[in-house]
Image (cartoon, rainbow, N blue to C red; front, side, top):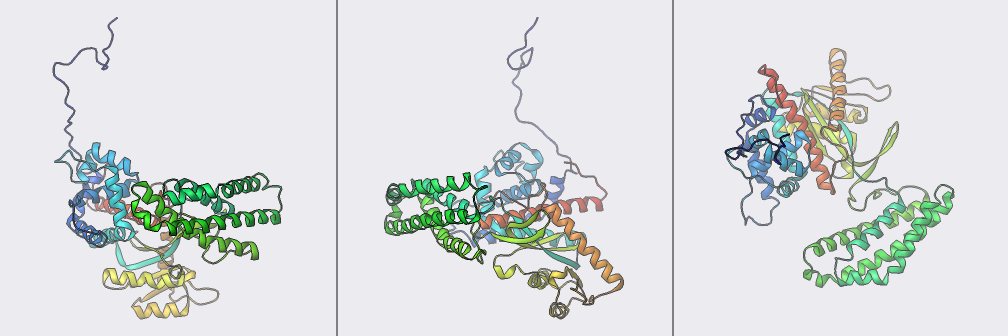
Length: 465
């Protein structure tokens, strides 16, 4: 019996097979249509303005902004990691066309794509999304004369916060980072070794007997753990301050470790008084820290069945007639109010499109007689704020039914954003700024897919890919 060769062929080839393939991509492929629809010169200009505001020096080689913007768009509409994006751009012909790389064999690596995404941040991706929505309005796929708005929560990929768990992670991070942060911090680890062992014993005792132990007994263990954490946190702050003049001698991972320890010590200094307040009063302190590494996260009481509290960030979403969405991240505690966002959404629309919407709807959380009067003063003719209690509707008849219908449709858009296709919830982000960038990127992917589908439907074409 004839045996196959090691390369899987029974007969050798006269000439080596070429590894350079020739592929013709269908013109109705969604990535091809998207590439030919977007004004890349406009996007490059917006990206360059964001970049100029963040770089320390213009020295160095100029970035491949056109290619990196294509990579960002690919990640948004397909939801993939940076490594997967690199692989797709290198070997997938429509993705290379999207990134304007069909005439070259160069491909950006995943670290370059990630650095660009971090540099753009939440504000940069928001500006790209605004361009897409304006393009949809120009193409008659969206109508800014009717808008509805709502607030939603973006959950963070963090463990459920509890006092003992937060303090345990503090000790673990100090022990790990302290080995690379300089001789002063390494000396602290040696002198405070007994405190680290004591904290480990308290944590083990708390977790092993948690079910049968009373609330008062668990509270005493938390208080004892807090005392140990306070001593280590104070000693860490003194070590970091004493070694500050030698910090310039660190390099590589040492610089990063020291920076993280400084942030960790500052966060723990704010968390320990909050823990003691909870032990003393039984109430959660205002602005309670729920994560040591992203202290900007907060708890939001939602009152949902099976999910009373969500941990993450609060967003405001505005939907134009046609389904396109605009997102606003609440950066300050004062920006998390529904009553305030009901007005801010209209101001943002007026700034983006040059005029406020003629009809506007919001749920009852944004209602007040003052808000109704303010919106009418802005120029909104049909104010559809759902009233509270026995208050009358500001509109009636067919206008009211239409606004209620449009208001319900925004829930579908929010649900789609939070699906696995776009990944608005629980993004793989380790900072407040990247949480915001991932949220805006999910909205960008949602709008881009809606844009290309709408354009294909107008021209009677069937998309592929």
